[in-house]
Length: 222
Ligand code: DX5
Ligand code: ZN
Image (cartoon, rainbow, N blue to C red; front, side):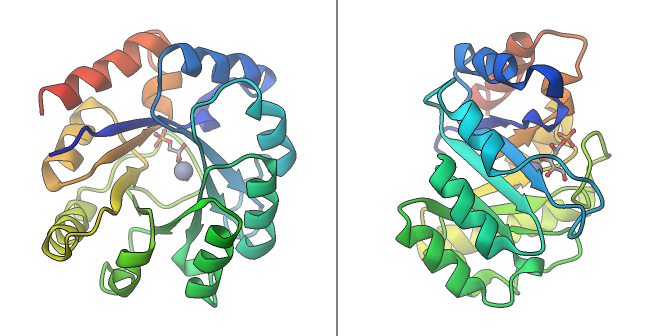
């Protein structure tokens, strides 16, 4: 299996010093930086938007993965790509025209991904697998960091992995929410190729670099 990517989510970083957090991730060579954009409508919380993406862009060359937890993904997707996002993840549950959203992101030169909530089946997205960069399987209900991983989604990861391998797609299978060393191991064993982690990296007793190092060892030993 190819190397598993580690994507720290800055949702759990200190919002008063986000640029310093991104610089710290730059020094740790994170694979992607996961940026959770919430609009207070698709999910209750509000975080930040394209202007923050633009403000952080010059702090690192690490790819920015914008996870749009918004009701109007079309408008926000365009804005975050213009602000420097490299990968844009839209929620299947928020898109009336998923194919159209994917095509619009790609036509701007970014990679497109789709996130699915714990209640959403893999079958509802399987026909799109050949045309997306990343399938993001939520391990928790979206909206908040620090929640407990739902083991029931492991089966969905296995299904996605079997489907991608059978069709020889290069689709990245990411898992987001509730990921720590233990649940990360389970997700990897089920077939995940990208682990998103917020509180396990920014809220841990260990430093950010030691926490990332812990994930790296996990992936190397896989
Ligand atoms: C949750 C977000 C996640 C969040 C994960 O809605 O999409 O990216 O940052 O946080 P942890 O890793 O703490 O579950
Ligand atoms: Zn996220």
